[in-house]
Every structure is written in structure tokens, then in C-alpha cells.
Image (cartoon, rainbow, N blue to C red; front, side, top):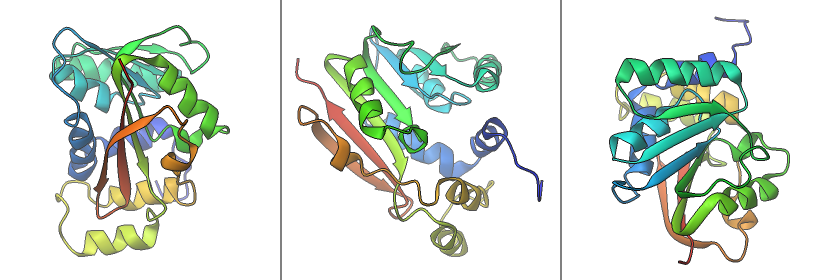
Length: 207
């Protein structure tokens, strides 16, 4: 793999097998109530980890991604894991009109040209009384901090070297979610993971 530019699908599918990566996203999903009778929209779903975790908590889940290969991979992994989550190709524009009790976006804002508009669009998908869940690497996410955290030995062993890969992919692309959040977004929780390398934001929309 050295010297080869890996596709995002390959990188993030491989990362889903890393214990630290699964744990971060599971912690985020666990911030929300159980989902019996409720729906969840995961935007920029990638290979579908968050969508599968949300479905396991009782939500009716749809994941959407602009990358056709990501969507195919997400569908394949959902079948493999016996998940009820479904997936389709879609972006913020094509999803206009969708409403969900929970809307999530993991590592999405970092790759958008207009992050403020992206966050507003995500907020618009949230049904009154619902939640927006954002998971993003912070400004602390860089190869030096990743290497330090790995060397301390506090991460699950499986694929922990993947933290350096994640850091390299996201270095210099941190999003200050608080700074770009619309004024009507009420933050209900903020959680730091991996010693502050990753942030989890939860916003609740008034009923």
C-alpha cells in the first residue's frame, strides 16, 4: 500500500475494523435515545458503520453517500452483519425534503467546501424534537498526536495503527462546529474522544 493513493472507500472500510474507530462511533450513537419507532438519516455514510450501529439500537436507518462504491460496500457489510440499515446514493441537495428523528454526519463537514451551508442543510433534515449528531476530528488530530496515543498503549490493539492513517487523512481539515453552527442550534452535549483528537456534538431541535 506504500506509495499508492488509496480510495476513501478502502481506507474507511479498513478503519471500521479498528477497535478505537468502532468505539468512538459507538459512543456517539449511544448519546442518543433508543430508537424504537423512530428513523435515522446518516449523511455521508461511507461504508455504513454508524448506520449499522444506529439500526442495532432500534432505529429505521437510511444511509446516503455520494460515492457509489461506498454505497455498494455499505450494502455488502449490512448483509454481512445482518443489519436492517438501507443505503442509497445521495448528497445534501438530493436529500432535500427528508426528515428524520436523528440525522448524523461523521467526518463529512471536513470534506465540504461550504461547511456552514452543509451544517445548515443537515439541521434542516432534523424533525422538530429530533437530534443532529456530528462526529469530526479536531485540530489535535495529526500524525504526531496519533503516534503518541498509539505509543501510550491505551487503544484497543486491533488495527490501532489506523489512527495514524486517519490523522494523515484529516490533518489540517478540522472543523470548528461551534463557530459555524446556526444560532437556532442548541448544543446538548459535547464529548471528547481519543484524548481530544475527535469531537462528538449533539444538537437538539425544539419540538
